[in-house]
Length: 309
Image 1 (cartoon, rainbow, N blue to C red):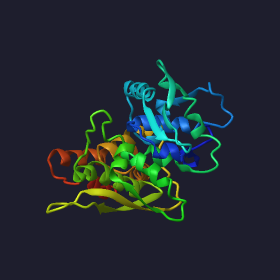
Image 2: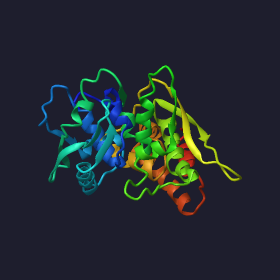
Image 3: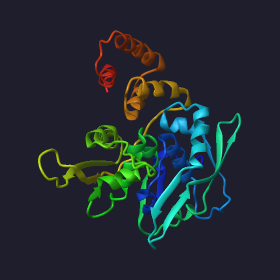
Image 4: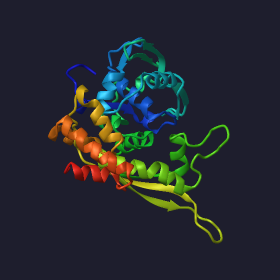
């Protein structure tokens, strides 16, 4: 990303092959990869080095990142395996990142991307997915990020409804261990609570996409609950660009508002626009005392009301 670019202006591009592929990644790893994607250009050589700054990432997401965690995330990225079937029928297995070098004392990571993955990010003419960098960065859970990408694949299609086999979706999200076959969320109620519900809340409130879904049950002889076999998703796209107003000096306050006090990032941004740091900290101190005394049941709602947002 160049100095003149802002996160509101950056659109990320990737082939639908990546969008639909199977791979595992943490939320921080995804954010590092998003920052690399924002820098990739068609004219780049295969040896091109991309630089990601922990400080810049913290400013863009409003969260504090320990440099040790930053380093661990990039180390993991080098090992993350992407798997999927190509248009020609071949089955590709590749990593996203070829190398990662942590620059000691600077909070910077220098990365090169794998040659096999590069074509899926550049000069895309058809069957590609686009989505906003700022939105993707600020989705908290990795499942919300992955589902946001999947839904973005459908946002410009005439038919924005699609069905997907539940097991296939779980495989894309790497919730089923390939060696043991163990399903991390075997019961649908657990999958719904851990994956679908949090993603629905985040995507529908923070992004340019909203979605709903219908459960498609399979057949089962005899009594008892029928198994969930498919999910039918309906995607609604509203072109918008989320804007957050904060700078490096406000980062600690912004982080407290969004983590400790459970506010959305747009709410935290509005507070920083309307109140001084002294006023904010005084209010947060009073709210914190009420939390300690167990006088508040919904921290986010109470904080928002207290700041009149």
